[in-house]
Image (cartoon, rainbow, N blue to C red):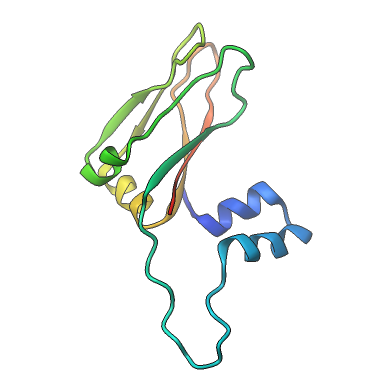
Length: 125
C-alpha cells in the first residue's frame, strides 16, 4: 500500500484540526493569483523510516540509503537492530521509484517473535 506524503501526515496528525497542520506542512502551492507554475517536483534527498510499535530499549532499526533509492532495484532489509529477534522488509524497484517521486510507503515486516511491524518509508526533500 502506498500513500502520498499529505495522506501520511494526516494519519500522524489526525483529522479535523490536523488538516490545518497538514496543509501548512505539506504546502498547497502559491497564492499569487497569477497562475504561476507549481514548485518543482519532490527530489529525494533524505530517506526516512519509521517502525511502528517498536520495542523500547531493544528496538529494530531500518536505514534506507539514498543510494538504494537512486539505484531503484529490489532490496530486502534486515531490521533486527538491538532486538533479540529479526524481521525483514523488502522494497521493490517500483516502490523505490514511488519513494523517489515523493510518495510515502506503508509496508509490513515479515513475522518474527510472533508479530510483525508496520514500517513507513518516505523521503524528506
